[in-house]
Image 1 (cartoon, helix red, strand yellow):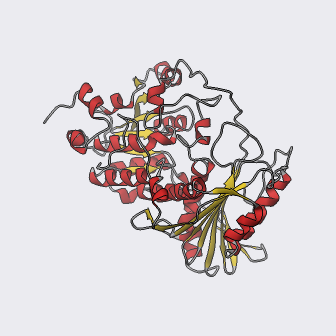
Image 2 (cartoon, rainbow, N blue to C red):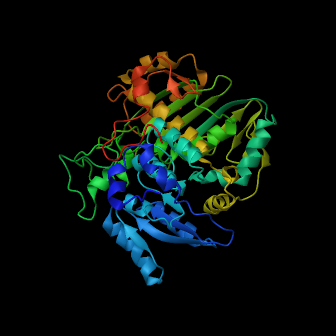
Image 3 (cartoon, helix red, strand yellow):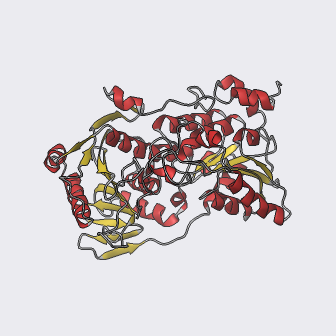
Length: 475
């Protein structure tokens, strides 16, 4: 077998499947009593939960840490040393992937790194737990699915609500017709997102950060926001807005409720970044309509409070960050069913399975069917966020009457837009002075995950990658 050296790995990290084929044989056969050895990549935020989530599981050891910020890396590594737990560290994920003794990669990096790390890990014979959204664009998610299947890897998505037994029971009950036909599955992300500030020029990058590694597949451009960490969510090169941040959880639940297993044939988004002027470029107020023909999936993002000067957030049928499934004879909010008058009919109980433990169980069984959130589910739900954002990105600012005209045939969309306007007015937003963007109506071939007769939209299904951090065409 050809040995893959550190130098050759670095050279090949962008390129062909052939360069990675030897890595697949690194996969260790895990016995029932063997410890599973996990490396956690990226932990300035959610990744800390990955570390502790795996550390507490019997038969699992966190043996390596990787973060492009050496200060963040040292802070977590010190905890291991203080406990006398051996730990490998690196700022470069490629070095971690060279370690043949690592069985799984768990990653909570910024979105733009999720796909490449997942694909590289699959090619290196490692299983993967990847945070939501699994991708930064639609094409990336499909490539992870292809890599998982090709290399027979267990790949779990970090949409932990899939491990909730109460939701599973509630959706089975609703899909059985107990509330009549399902009309709309509505995802809600009403979560306060204040301004990230307005800079006047390029900002210094923290000395502890390897900016080349942090940027990875994204364009290497000067930092134009006050805070590198976390606020990457609010700019397009690295983030997907709250639709792909908090919202992906609710998007996944809303699609789960509908029982849909492909992308929607039609999508339209309306929104804007309103209420303040800052360095963010994504929408902070947004609605997305996914039309499946027999039902709708409508998503709402609100980053402003319920009104100017308030700290409270709006609610819809009692939910702020949640899912409401509207049916012919009532509705389901979270895991509680109500009739059309709002009277409680049934509450579904049950806690669920630990999502990290579910991943480990599937690693031991080698059955992706044991996963509660297989990568295919993560890809489809992430892609619904991306196609909604593509409609928005290809849209144009418009007067309220023009937007009304664009969606007038869809009463559910009009009702949603009406509530959005009321919400913005309560926050002092004058839509005559600061216009909403009406997105481009898009038609999609859901099976092939391509738009119909729209080259501009198709171009946004992927991105231009910065060598050597290239998501390969052939995994």
